[in-house]
Image (cartoon, rainbow, N blue to C red; front, side, top):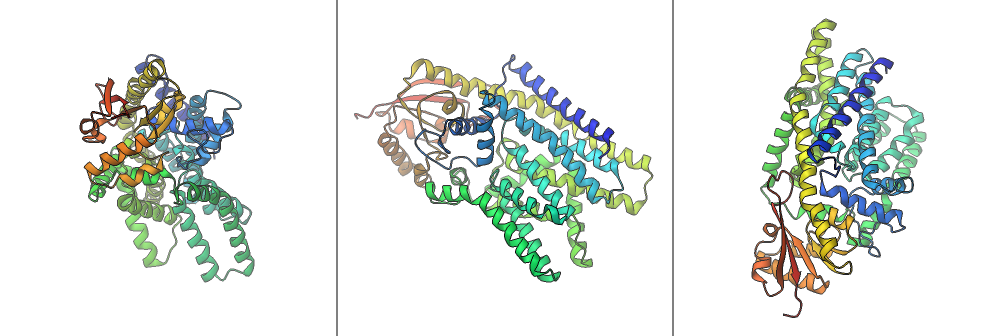
Length: 501
């Protein structure tokens, strides 16, 4: 990587951090909160982890409520150096964002046969100036770490160096402990290495090497799987089962529409070139029996797309679960444009102009999301942080509280929390599939059984629950947010529970 290019990438990355952080602080009068309530869920797990509780949300109750155990461990350990876990999470989130831009540069320079630094530089900048990537990197969530790890694994696989083989599988193990989607890449690399073993006449030495690599992967990835099985009977975290209950059988169409719209807004020229690259390179690969270097990113994108559409169609929060896939589209698009340039023999000046035009199309959405992001923080502050203040002033620390958003309230209060969405209270998930009337009765019985003193909920998430059971639910407070961009509802309602009816 050219030193001058490294300096440009670092300056662009730092400029983005300064711009996004400044916008957040201006909109929120100098207060820096998180743009997602889920950030505080990680912080709660991390805080308890640093206090000796291994994946406990409520101390004394182990639960697989985090989708990112590695992120929890990282932030938890950082607490020994700095007690401000929100600052730590945001710092690491931005750090991995900048490191990912450097890895993208190296990947693109490598797959363009080290013949075009220009494409590597421009696409690295394009990654940095993608609004959704910057937004999620400002959130304190694990996504930028996941992006960094998935890019690093792909880069090591591209290099195909024997000395890095075990590192590749070790990083795969860390990848799946960052987000479960990492299993998609691990599975594709396993197929690739198995194919090389069977059809490229690899020696028995390679078989032993692959076996050891997989053993390293399993050692790193299996503990949380075993922990999940032990705590909730599933190899996946509670989050997967809890969020999955929100979907309807027709929601996959909505997911496709929203995801396509997000990609087009990110940069419609990159999206179109990457889709053209997926079709052309995949067809050409089978036709001419050529294994293009970007086939692994292509197959990851297509596999994860299929999984997301039919199993986990979550497009909330700017499609945050699918943001890493846009990173792979950048790589695919860069390779396709390099292929196009090489066939057309464009002059360097013409190539530079085309790349500049591609980059410019990222800026409108990049700037818009910066201001949206500031308003997301404002929304969380106006509802969840205000809820924390009210609870700490009006509710005893010994009271049990039922919530549908457990992040900031759980992190900033000392109350025992019941999660009505099942992310840390998986027992309640058995009621989510019932008919509405039966569901309400079951939820009521559950919260009474758990000795809840209060519930704080979005009423529209539980139609009829508070109205049908007025003898049990006494309305005491509400928080209303007028300019709601990211919250589940405009009103958060507080109810005191009467158990003697």
